[in-house]
Length: 169
Image 1 (cartoon, rainbow, N blue to C red):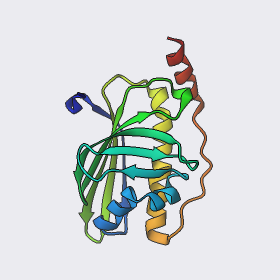
Image 2: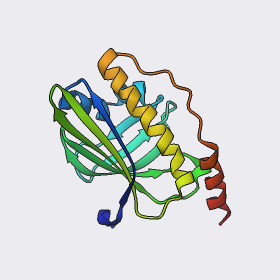
Image 3: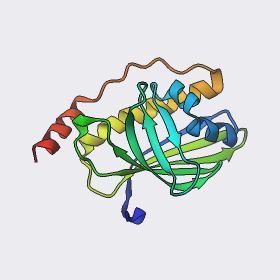
Image 4: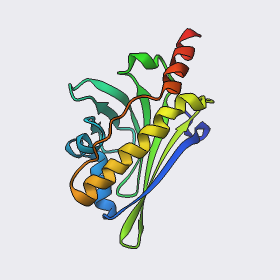
């Protein structure tokens, strides 16, 4: 069993969204909605602590799999992630992704935290540091305007180099 207390935050992203906590929660767990802002990926989540979690590519293949570690609608969703559908990533340790949703006036503060139990190199984390703001900005756009952002995403060169170094070990 994985000890969640050993996971330390490495990426934290905060955004404010003109929506209710319930709408933000639904946007995080609904497969059709996630496809809009998560670059074609759809979430498949069993709605309970201990439930299965998958992030599915457009072709239906599993990109990320894991387990729900906290299910507290509409305020907190925490999921253990394991990259399984990305052969270039090799066998990286799991990470913990947590979404905290808090009402702030007429808006919601959404805080996404990516935590790791190992000393993940900064160049490896550059992918998440580039990707999470794009994903969550697109989520905000869909909720506020009905349209996702059109962003061309590529893995950062430093992240690809870090993956090559890790595979060579």
